Length: 161
Image 1: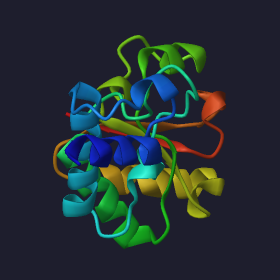
Image 2: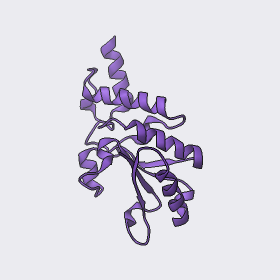
Image 3: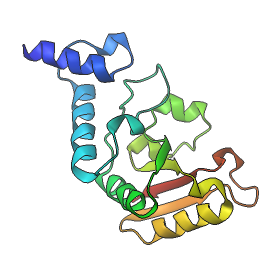
Image 4: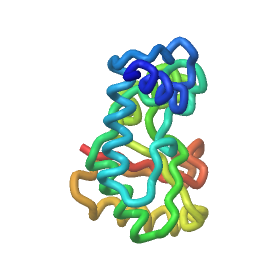
């Protein structure tokens, strides 16, 4: 019954058929830890918002999300209302495909790219960045500003130590 339960869980969350084996391994542990952390440290984010968007290189949950990232994102959501995640966790291959830095914190569960209606303007992006800089354990934030990081569009990158 335990194996069947793990397999059902994996079918709900994992992308690749080869990862759906009913065995509690490293990938299933990461999935369960992420689910627990998102539920414990946020009020209204869902686990799927942070999923790697590669489509085929990983299970979708290649790393464990950092608790400080989750707490700080919830603080932004409390302040600004809806905060959408355009990029959360990334596996190595997806990070490479999207042109992410080799040391991208997305690959360690310590970064997210976020957007909402406020970030549609540079003034709004700067406000969100300013709010992020006031949060504990924050490390860095940037956005598309004056032609820098044009691939960010209207999103804001945030990460934690």
